[in-house]
Image (cartoon, rainbow, N blue to C red; front, side, top):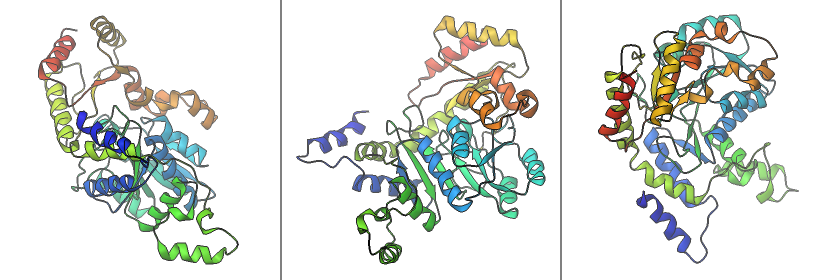
Length: 383
């Protein structure tokens, strides 16, 4: 929208505008924290970078590694971050109701292992994947909870918190197709001040000067008198900063986020109400903020699935088969390389596998008009 572009134009008109991370990045971080209900947020250049920082922080706490529970229905960068930081991904299947980790299977898996460091839970496609039982099992077993909310901005949990405000860390994406956009961008959020300082530093090469904790900075500087205080690197870090331009767009879009979330949720409930009986409808809609219309067959029916795809192609309707991230990640070559095993994905994760072969999603946008949605539904009901 033009309202998103105008602040950027005004910035670029300045005689010597600052474009790298500065005051507007901090302003966006503070506004986002207030919206989410957490004290601290760190703006980065993508949701994948947000994933990476979360696992880099976990590595600082568990330098020898360990296991991280992940769903097979997620985005590849979640699993890749676990792998690159030296942890072993432990896959736990999902439920169709939440498209997230099955809490009963999770409890069974935790009983089998004594080296589980964290659960990296994905709130998939705007549906709440976090339950009271999962929170309780994390607390009782001293397992850290990291929430991936990259495509579920505005989801409300059972306890009234927003998704992303419950875990020790959470990550969001502002990719252009998500609930709000900074073109490319992401956010890492936490309620822990020490974690916040660490994230700020590793976002920018591990530089001490990125910390906002004056006492900590003074203590480190005094410990290394032979180093220039502006170039002390406290930890192995990255450069995943975003820009003032991205922050300005984010500040503008955030003002409309609640209304966009509400419209997407309204669209999804209308979509489900009009679906034919062969489509799965029993999602957990409490607090949902739908990202994309989920179209999953109730039964394993290759003939019907083929009809759906042929019809959509003929009508020029865009869709993503397998749904988020290409379906069951256990079928992806990079995961087969990581696991170095020939696990049968249909046995290891039968629910995710059902979505892989008999599910898809279609675009849901706040600007979508009812006549367009009715057209889509008429096509689906004609199959």
